[in-house]
Amino acid sequence: MSVEFNADEVFQMAEQIERNGAKFYRKAAAQAKDEEARGLLTHLAEMEDDHERTFAAMRANLPDEARTPMVFDPDNESGLYLQAMADGYVFDVREDPSEKLTGGEPTADVLRMAIAREKESIVFYEAMKVTVPPNAGHAGLDRIIREELGHIAVLSKALAALWP
Image (cartoon, rainbow, N blue to C red; front, side):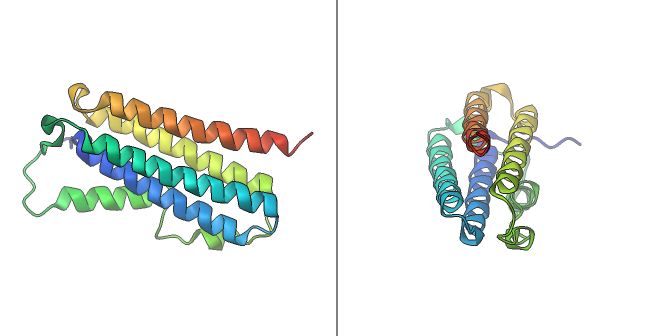
């Protein structure tokens, strides 16, 4: 049996992914030795916070039919599953990013890691579009994808600036 998520559930995941991203960037900033890198990583965490708020507002404006559960779920098992999926798929909060980021990595390596994670989030959202019926939030998902592409642009610009 295939599982379909409604747009409300996908936006809940998007919010969690953004929270996870903000946590990642804050930990990376705390470990950065370079002041400029610390500022950039802090700014990226703030961007993730802004995106979380944007996605929460988008979710709040969904029509009622976009909130209709696609399956009977009296014990909120799908909600728990979605939480686990968001936590484990992108910016895994079960894994402490500080274990991967010692603070000794060059800024370029940290930026490359962040770009890879942003790309993973885009793949995640594109995959989620398959599970959400077109009339239940595709436009919102497209907006999420554009927001994540914006993150990649900021990160890529910062990476390019490291090489004169």
